[in-house]
Image (cartoon, rainbow, N blue to C red; front, side, top):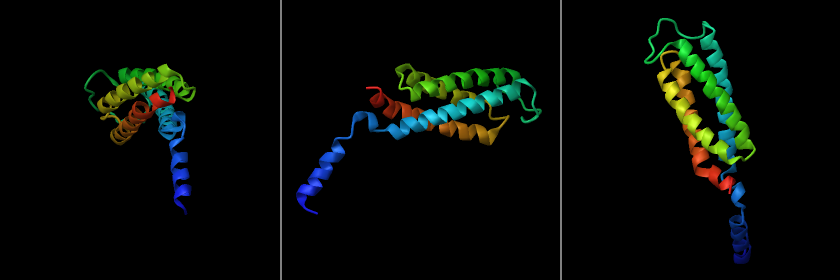
Length: 142
């Protein structure tokens, strides 16, 4: 390979449009926030309807299983709306996604007595969603 070919390839890499840089992270964040939103809606309905999925006889830091179920249902519905907005490249959806992922992290940490491993896994996904939206989504909306 000659130096002109290698320099031409280097210039070609620098000409990647701003919209494409980090597009994978933004897509990942949109898919994951939608998936977590759907799971939160399902788990919220299960907690409200006294499903036998959750551990019995546990003590929650604040409220009861019904209160956490309603909170999960509301946050999950907002996360589903934010996921559609992220895919549509709407500016407000990035901020709604960041806020709901942060709120969901707090909810899942307080929801640990009911489903410990699931809550920790969802917290890890929320951290990745926040990273993807903070680090790359601004470039996508420019």
